Image 1 (tube, rainbow, N blue to C red):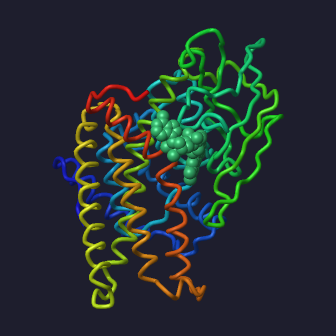
Image 2 (cartoon, rainbow, N blue to C red; image 1 turned 45 degrees about the vertical axis):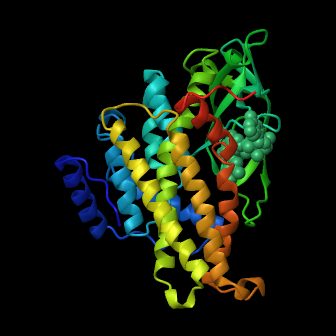
Image 3 (cartoon, protein in one colour; image 1 turned 90 degrees about the vertical axis):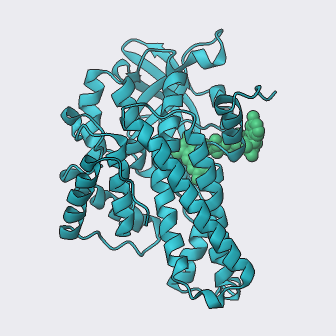
Length: 382
Ligand SMILES: Cc1cc2nc3c(=O)[nH]c(=O)nc-3n(C[C@H](O)[C@H](O)[C@H](O)COP(=O)(O)OP(=O)(O)OC[C@H]3O[C@@H](n4cnc5c(N)ncnc54)[C@H](O)[C@@H]3O)c2cc1C
């Protein structure tokens, strides 16, 4: 398996983490049910955080180690090497945490960051709405200023883990009569607030990982506004940049676990077409990893993630789908006849789960537009 090696410091860091992992075996994570995933992910996060292995690039005063995103990536690589389960508070760790470090007030950093790391507070992302997904700036959820805060009303959709989240970071409208990007603000909303209703949405995989969330005159105190009123767009984009780089890296590593399992398959049982497709998956995985390394190394000097994350996200999500299709085709007739065992079930579950990955965090079409316009400097599409 490839490994990120940037300096003696990063190599020493990896050795230290490996030693810790050897002394703290990861919990079993063979059960694919959502309930089990949540329970194991929460406990595993607490264990990792108690030894400061999460948020390693966060400032020391907020529970991190003051290192760079490179060390963060090394932790992810080592976790995948031992097939550790995913932590539950991934959105907090990879999105709202870094965003609060960059844009939050001192009080917000003190209040939220350590609980994000420990998983004591789980976060969900309240961006998408029925009429605002790709066109995120079209959000209609409205926060009306009142004495001491806002009243928030509107609907969010596809909100992953809202059913078990303690907090939601919400993009909402606070002004009209200005350009649509300028009338947005970024609020931190407790999910136990009066006026919030969460309804699960069942996915093709059978899980109900995401939800509709309704806000009905929910009071949000002024201190929960991140940045200034009207700065929501800038902060939302910053969130998406972290999502596409940092969260994608962790997902990309997870898909390498699936690839490794396939490489163990007896290749004589594969058709020539399947063997060629498997070779393509291996090449894709190496290319994705090399691209991620290239980007991560530029963040070693504290550079914030930018539009280049669209390359990572696009390459990973499309190759992950090809990989999952191949795995399913190799299961073949057994799957079609519904002869389920745990192994076949896991392959099918991963295949169905993979379908949403070219949509979540921005669709492939949107990533291609960002690459064309912001990285290649091509003219804007109409
Ligand atoms: C598994 C999963 C988890 C998710 N989790 C969350 C979450 O936790 N929080 C959250 O806020 N959202 C979440 N989402 C929502 C996700 O961000 C949106 O689904 C996504 O941005 C697309 O928006 P949409 O569904 O409204 O589709 P639309 O924007 O309506 O797009 C429909 C189709 O039109 C295409 N299209 C739209 N505009 C353009 C354009 N300008 N150029 C070219 N093609 C275009 C799209 O590519 C797509 O194929 C999740 C989605 C999935 C699948």
